[in-house]
Image (tube, rainbow, N blue to C red; front, side):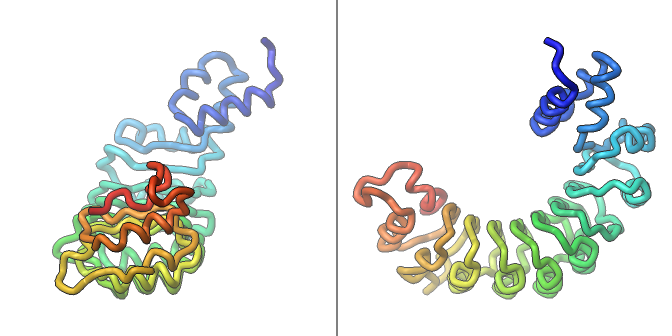
Amino acid sequence: MDLPEECWELIFRFIDEDDYRFLESLSLVSASFLSIANRVRSTFTITDRTLPFLHRHLLRFHNLRRVRFHDFHGDINSILLQISLSCLDLESLDISGMPYFPDLKKSSSMKEFSCSGVLELRENDLVSIGVCFPSLQKLDISYPESLPCPVFDSAIISLSSNLKSLLKINVSGNNLITDKSLVSLSQNCVLLREIIFRDCDFVSSRCIEFVLRNSRYLESLAINGIGWRPRESFSKDAFLLCRCLSELDLSDSFLSDDLLPTLIARSACKDPANPSPEELLLCVGTR
């Protein structure tokens, strides 16, 4: 069937969202398909193999929005400079697993940034994230290999003061940060929808209750290892404080038996005595 180009563009956009790699095969079919594929391609992965042709790719895909580094051993700083000079309005940048944290270029369009598992993540790197990406909505700084220069509360506090539009953050594995970091995120990033704080040993149940009370839009909270320290527990109404909360992961935590009825009630079960698996979503991951 001979479809109008507008229809093909919608199809190609759907393919791009699902897996952009299929666009390359379609671009070989005809000149028209090549033109559409070049126009709708929004994601590009930089590897050692793509590096020699990067300039050509940046000219070809002029609507790129998301860039990811993977299996790359070159100069990240020079690549980011080249991208910034191409005038692309990037919305997402992923440098996870890279051997060092690069020099960031200021961007008001950046909405998502991930540097999970970066081998060298220092406090001034977090400060630069807040300064360079003030419109950030999703941030992943989890599990850095940053010894002997770990991240402390002061960096998270500075970061949170600049990210007023932040919706989601993953700080897991930064095991020297304390309640101060979580409190600053809750107070400064008032639009937060999702917080992931796994393997942060110095965060207390009292702090979590503060977040539940203060973050009015919070929908998802994941944190582990709570309740094992002496005299640490949640109050009975702790999980009734946040009205929007729909997902709660307290893996490897110790919860008293009298909290379970509260969790069931919080999940708005139609029949609290016989809740469905979906209605027990709030309880998943607890012990």
